[in-house]
Length: 226
Image (cartoon, rainbow, N blue to C red; front, side, top):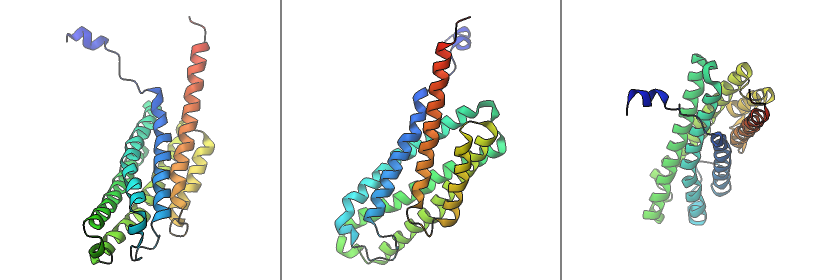
């Protein structure tokens, strides 16, 4: 490749369909969480009888999490692309870091949950009621209800702050993000289904981005050529 070819190569652009990643993440995570909530009792010290009746459903939910995580990474990329030169180092660090920590803790909880399912498959009668089962169950409960939820709340706050200052999303979505983030940070221990507000908020932000992208594309196509 000659230097001239390198200089004339077009820069890599974010595909317009990338905003759909937020919709995919929202749907996949909401389905996975709903399957877990209807299959696994909320209390971490329950004996584990659900493993006999809901192991297939729980395994399906756990297998959906990696795909939701991949879509979430694309969603973060879409937001950073919309920021462009407006990206502030402080808020961008909190935004990007909280997003990665959210994914990391979510994957960790899913991995431990997968270990529970493998242990049950290997020796079902010995595994249920064992100290290993109670320990793993408590680890998943602590990670999901403390770290995953809190990182989701921090991500919502940082993203909403960026949206207010840069208008990468509608103002009402930023304000709603603050309200829902407070619910996650303070009320997640009292409302068992509160975690669903995070994928729901990401869904609304993604729809807003898609609508805005469509309007810009349509206006650009209708503008007269100079």
